[in-house]
Length: 364
Image 1 (tube, rainbow, N blue to C red):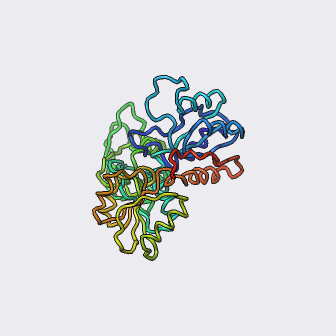
Image 2: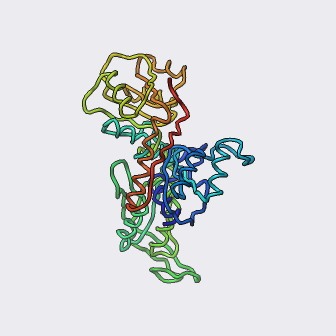
Image 3: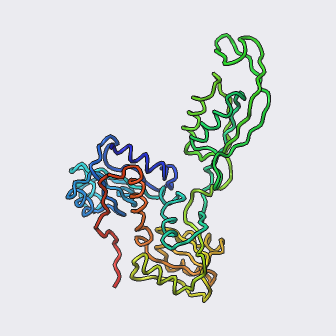
């Protein structure tokens, strides 16, 4: 299997278009046409991780955190990033990083935290905006049903927990073909009236190119009439953080014990206990302090994340319990997301989890 085929599976699950503007997800080192001999999955890339891949004859490393994140002016081997790049290139090791695109997708990093905690009724905490559009296509009634299914298959028509969503209205279209036309119906030089359907569907902007290509390919008309509208609606299937519920309430100290056990956390920092049952829980993998207010506004009892700074704890204001389990600890199970995608499409593939502990933070 070539790298491109595997990355198509990753990006079908978590499209690169969902990454944040500051991010650098995607194939960072290597060629899309390389044949994969084996895959090493890690949270970070360090020279030790690259050496682990070399030792085990695995020529693709899949990582959550990007190796190349900021601008590189030179590659001299002066730090772990430059050393990792040199080592990877010398040994024909390709590197793919799935970062905030995997944070933003509905079944991504934060959802994995929720699954480990046994939460249900999951919803995105901060849904993405400015990503939904609507397409309106006019098609003869004889081809309407076929075109709708083409559009559904291209990814349009998803609203919340529903798919195949469309609005359809019948009407009459008119046109006159000139001498250079090759009309599907009607005659050159004569005004023609045709019974048509107006098909409307919502879609995420990142599939627009593919969607329009499929519409043009399947539509019977030589000149296809369609409109594109930008929507202000939030998209509840993509965004950062997630909120869910325990089936039955638990107390705050019980939650800390669960987190210590399931996430192997040696030190948990938290705001003041509120001495009330915990039912509704908001989470964000990685550095999630920017979502504390969103968690409060969602009436969550608890917000769990990593990298919470001193002054961030004041935002709790005795209205929510803030828990910091650590950046690495909150994202460690992202490796399982990568693994499941790989195994779903390639059950016999050689895949290993890195045995290198890349967490740079130690506790005493």
